[in-house]
Image: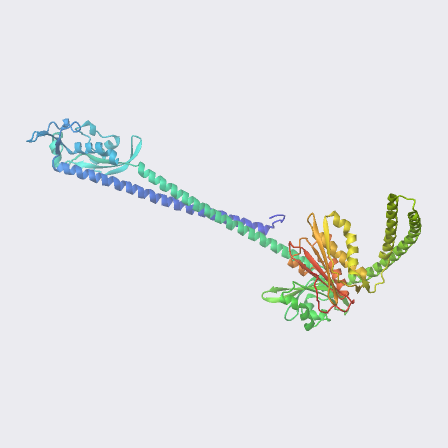
Length: 624
């Protein structure tokens, strides 16, 4: 938000954005958590169903095996160390038999068979099964606590128990069903008093749940990580939307604030601002400054066109002025005219016009500056400066003339004495060389005094023959110290075929000096170069001054010669090039600029050889 102070309306909007964002984040969190919980619950249920199904399959397999063995009253197997005769079946006749070949066999009842299969193959598929009862023959079939509880439930009529229990601190899914006495069971258990159809015990299966827990954990991890990522992305997206919404509201508020401030500044400005229709030329808007200066109300101005307050123009002439603007060649057009007040008086204004669109309607925006005081001040200043300049030059001319006279007399005497001494043959060669140097320096001092007197002699203001190269050299001399201080080198490329031109020397000097100064200021590096080229055609002399500075952008190039336009900030007035352009145009010449960012800038002057009024002849050569 920077330095802007948010008003209450914007604060409320931002608070609303945060509230909506917080609510959306809460809803999004609830949705993601609920979805995750639902998926996890479904997955967990699916795993439980799978474990239960596996338990039933294992149980049914064991049950089928037991029923088969019961149906056949058990089976006889060879007696071995691993399968000894069951001592708890000693009451059964033919527990042990011998085949005709002499091989000894022992009877295995269903309980014995199931127990041995479980002991032998539990490691193979990890599913222990067991036949147990509250009245067991073999103590090894004694029920554990869970089995004892379930067996008691069977006596009360429960048909099946399936639940989780811990065996040796490991979780198992345990399934147990009652085992009813069948006729085949009485072979071994009749002596215990059982009857067919009674609950004799239970058959159980225990499924280790660790593998299923691992699957649940893996799915849980995947679901949580996936949904956490989705949740994070959602919050990130919500954060981006919230930030952009907040930023958009702040920018909108800033824009509206700036617009209101700008409109208020324009409306209260003393400069006149008009908006008028590009087709009908009727006023749409005029600020208070325009109303005050012209003496009309807004309602009165809306009934008038631009030509009612600027009678010097008609539609044809106005369209000629704005044609480059409509073509897009320029961003705005400037001209000076006189505004007509309601009371019939007139005052000079400088007008700048550009276009804008409002609901697909083309409008002109005109800003008019009252330049009455400036015109009067310019006239006074010009007169005053001309007088001061003339007086200064006159005084300096008299002073330098007097100095030249007073200085040249003794200098002439010293030179004469030195020349007489030189004519003596009594001096050595070394002293003769020193005398020659002294005489040479005396003549140089005399020439300097003459140039000083000529430089400050007031010009007549009339055209005279001018040596362009001499003017360039004089202005380079004035800039020499500053250029050397900044390590800026001037390279001169003068043509041999440049004739003298007719013009006012002081003005040409002013233009050249201004452009060289601008070139020096454009070079922001520790060193640089300024190239000066001259050339001529049949009717013109060309001067090109090129620097190795930063260059000028295309937008600035369009306004480079406009009054008060400057790229130097508070260091510049924006009048230098505008004045130079006016001087060259007044001389009948032209001033153009070529520039590219990073490649420096070139100013090209073309001056008529024969003076003002001969600037339209065809150009033969260019200033390279």
